[in-house]
Amino acid sequence: MSARETGISLESFSFRPESKTYRARYDQNETSASMAVVATLAAALDTDPTEIDQLQYSIDAGALDGLLDGPAATDARVEFTFERHAVAVTDTTVTAARVSDGDNESGTDDAMPA
Image (cartoon, rainbow, N blue to C red):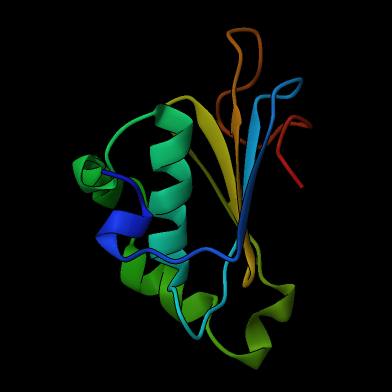
């Protein structure tokens, strides 16, 4: 099942093979930040979006949506690591970059996607 089949709408989606980075753009009026994260990670992990339920143990979806919703969110950025992917979320984008074995898996190193 794809993100679209679950009702998750993204404005654009891309993958950069050289950096193993997925990037999604979303519109807050149509899709919450947490749902954009689910859609992006589903693609990065090659899995059904409905099977990413353990994500709730890594981030608080309500807090993420609250932080990144509205005009004050334009400077906000949330970073975390999930299933060996460094994830960065802003009010309009989600990036997920595969963390290689030699990288710092905390998501705080220079490998963090922009």
